[in-house]
Image 1: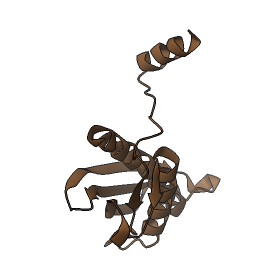
Image 2: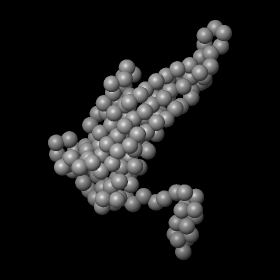
Image 3: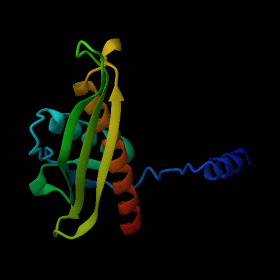
Image 4: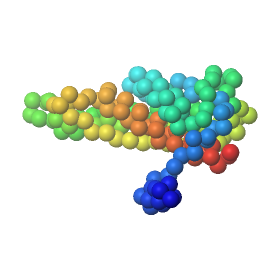
Length: 159
């Protein structure tokens, strides 16, 4: 009875329960993200976050690209940082970081199972110790959660 009530309440709030069996034990490769932008290091943070999130959300095992049943590729399309507000001395009070990532999920035969684009802006305050690099890493973590959730829904459709 309590479980049914919880399910109804969660559904009414827009939440959904994720099936822990999505992925069916298949192998998944997540190669290092491509990053043609001038901001280096984002691809490493993104790739590590994606791998951790895939293991958290899906029933998959990570493999090399050649041996995997599924391949999730990502590319950093845009990474930017800028000062939104600066004082008269040129000190930044509020900065902004933006990240755009394209992703694609294919199976072993090359059939595309899903694709998408993730965009996010994040403001930071240098006066309290925040910086653009940390902001871009935070966006990469958010992107990995969103991308793996999308992958999960695409896999649920194909299972």
